[in-house]
Amino acid sequence: MPALRLTWAAAAAALLLAMLAGCAAAARPLSPAAEQPLASGAEPNVTAQSGPMPLSGGGAPWLPAGTFSGEGTAFSEAVPGTGAGFACSFRYLNPFFSTNFAAINRPMWDEGHACGKCVTAWCVDDLCPVKGKRVQVQITDLCPECKEGDVDFSIPVYREITGMWPHRLAIQWEWSDCSPQIEGDIIVTPKDGINAQWQAFYFANFRYPLNKVLLNGKELQREQFQFWIHSGELQTPATFELEAVNGQRVVATVDNATQGETKIPNFPTAY
Image 1 (cartoon, rainbow, N blue to C red):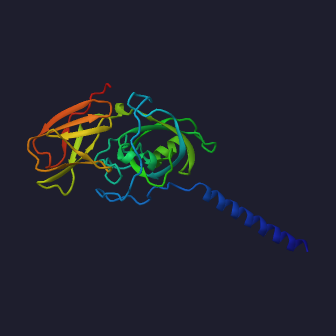
Image 2 (image 1 turned 180 degrees about the horizontal axis):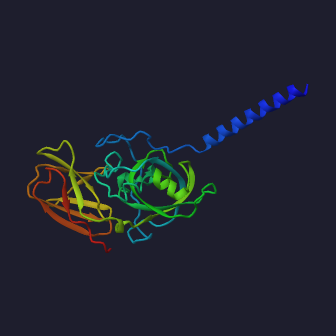
Image 3 (image 1 turned 135 degrees about the horizontal axis):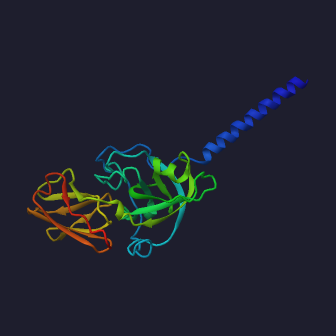
């Protein structure tokens, strides 16, 4: 019965191909980061578990040193000039970082201190049609399920680095100085819910990551989702003093810090 044997062979071959296709799809899942974007202004429900990172070496003396290895994934298309829906809560992203952004893994999130730092990443996976192309991104979000070394990119950056639609591919990366990409003033935005005895502020577009912020000489409390809290009555005009991780400072006095977006001078370009 040759016809019957041929039918069974064809069926077996089809079953084998289906199993292989299923395995291939399962082997490269998409990003473990949250797939549904937060509404603008929402506070993400995330808890970090990491201590401070040493600042030494790298492309600048204040950057963490070394080359890191992990898996690269992707989680978001480009955004229209704001990172308010991401864990770093940046109310403004310039045109470059509206596309070139990423979420960092939980161990390296550092209670939000990674926000505003930049990394330069490249693909080392044999599956990548593009290997070794270095692309810089700013950390604007947390990838809660990523393991140490992993980076979750915007989809356009992922495709630029790997030459592929999002999969889970081996990458390497290092912390890098992105101050040349930052132009214009630092943008200060008051948080919703402020009152006469409690105020909080978001900062965005700073040339170097922030180390501390003072308001009228009082150091503000930094929350991991990047709003800075001032408790007590706020005297106006108010003077902000910002210190970057490289020790640079800017001081600016504003008339109405709680009445909408305010711009203050950025850090100088040299460090």
